Length: 209
Image 1: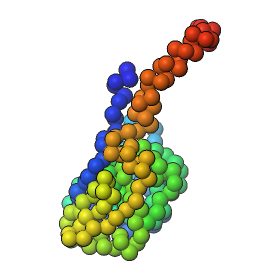
Image 2: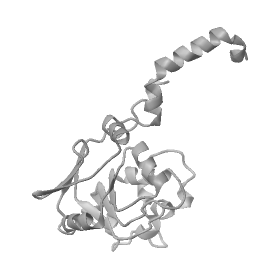
Image 3: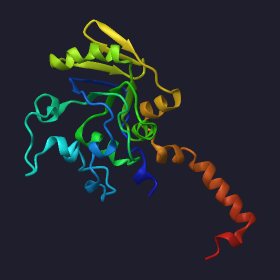
Image 4: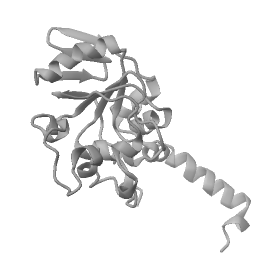
């Protein structure tokens, strides 16, 4: 059983993609994935409903003008957006929806704290950049040219230029090694088993049915 839940989170090392730019500030988690899609506890199948109210009309048809419905942006793995991204409720479905759509890196001037933390727990790299540096990247989105993310070196490479970003060392390690909360717990499996065995020997009545 333990083996069946290991390594669910994909390792993140480097990434290359045409970035998609969504120039909206204060995008909350309800905009990312509306409440009617929160009934599932599965991490898959949510991508089609990402930014649902902006992507579809009242009849469920794609709104062609919305950038994520346009090629090549509908294949983008890097999302550039406005400040305070992921505000609102703490639903983990928000990073699930981004990931299922294919977005594994978000670049923003700032994030809501819980959303920021949830990204790392689900294999998404949220990069914080000042707006001046973000403007440099936007030209590559407009020109439909790829940029590269190197997590190990903490660099964004575009053309002949590069921009540095910072990531907490522990969060960086988790992404590089694909360690979510379950994997971190399982890394201590031997110690947990030894503790349970010792406790069972000392206080066997605790384990009686």
